[in-house]
Image (cartoon, rainbow over all chains, first blue to last red; front, side, top):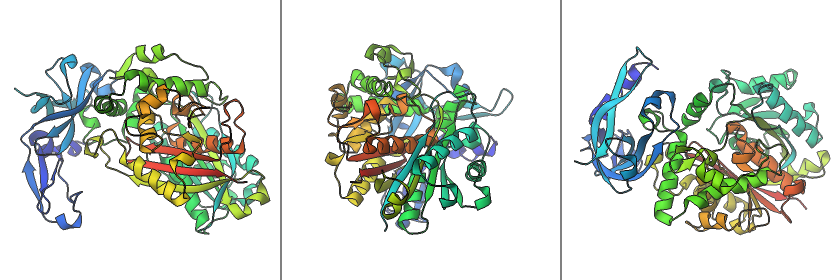
Length: 133
Length: 389
């Protein structure tokens, strides 16, 4: 896959940039051009907004059957997190015993290596979440 | 709009069919449907092909023209279109055929749907399935298709106290039905303990909670209901077609335990047909994972939210139960040639409504339903079929 594919998403993957709708206040992550709640009203009124990176676990799984790129990580915890700003995202949950993960637990973002394009390819980075310190 | 009937059905064996190619499968199912309908190739006005990802599975795009060509139809220059919509593409191809006939655009239309999944490694095939989820904001972070469905299962267990055993019972039931289907990939019953103790793929789901990777194809012939008896004595009416969408990524959905696309597609179909869930005796619902069937039972309003698990455990979805669900064995046991799913489901429902389902026949089946999903529920299609008396 081409390097710009990862480069384009750096603001959101490194620094959790999303958008806030200037019309209805809905927060989206990753950024949206059109607010899913108020549609056309939001055009030109979507403001960039940085998420604080803290949230609550809505659901999770422990992945044992992994894609080739994640083979060395398995088993790993994957979760859906509701950020305190309201938007939800999918992320790995790290630095935790999988048996200790619970729905409702508080988590925070941290910066990690997400993957690598083949053995000599570029490394791409982004967020993973861990229990809130 | 004109009423539309299914006058021909055909399907292949489902399984790991190393000796047969994508084209072989598509043609085999199509020919059976054409013979079953009693039409000749000159009668066919258009062909719609449902296929999820021949480009990735067998490195072949432009499969609409390919299937027409290898079906011996190239001299007729008939219009042929390939429909894509994740795992729902077969059902969407039926919808296109229905719309074309109902509107008066075409008279006799063939719908073919095929997938050849076993020419690539299992890991690669799973990655192709996952590509119907959000590649930039789910799979890049390590999400797998099973992992996303596992998170729906976990949340359903958390909110409704659905048990692991209830979820596993879907696989036991569908294998029981599949054992009666000579075209099924798995014609063998399995025990609850086997499902519970199978190696985990994404907790709480194990290997036997997942439908297999399969090769296979299915086809239908449709025409206006008023003309159906010219060709065939056992037409089945396609009563309604409902389709709906929802956010691509699971985390953007309103509720992890309800597929709003299924709810809306179901409402649209029932409204169009003037029917209710209580009118349905037999249903083929999307069970790519066990939890998916439980969500479908609830979202289609066959059972109240949270009751899908207990109803399954009580045997209410077995043949002979309150509503017979996945009599073919479902994706779980019949097999999951992913793009062929919606059409294979329709083939089973037509068979049931004709009274041709042999050992797995549902008594007095009058109205049947199919429910097909794309991705993790970003597309849902519901079709209702009715016996013509």
